[in-house]
Image 1: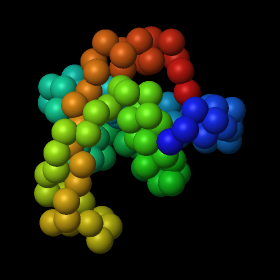
Image 2: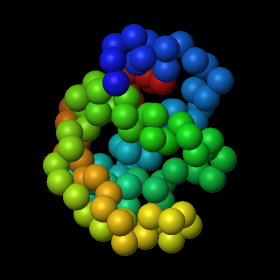
Image 3: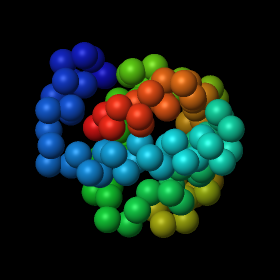
Image 4: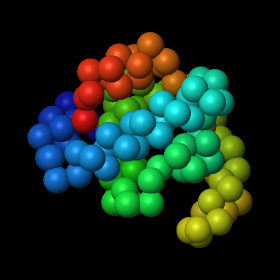
Length: 107
């Protein structure tokens, strides 16, 4: 994801609440599971009302901002979609950077 793409995402306020909820879910998962998390740890903390397409976009934005760093693969435990048993990215979380993002109320 490029800087102009990140700027466009930040400027789009239509899903700002969704994005904030995903960031909070990542922060909650990181608090509960340490600094290594995957979709398996994040998904239970994402509210049902979040527009599903903002989840991947927000995660990609956190990767582009170097808050999440790809650290291998785990098996997906997603039973709602068609991803159960497939590889899912595992991330190392830059906890100070994530805390700063949450504290700023960044969306």
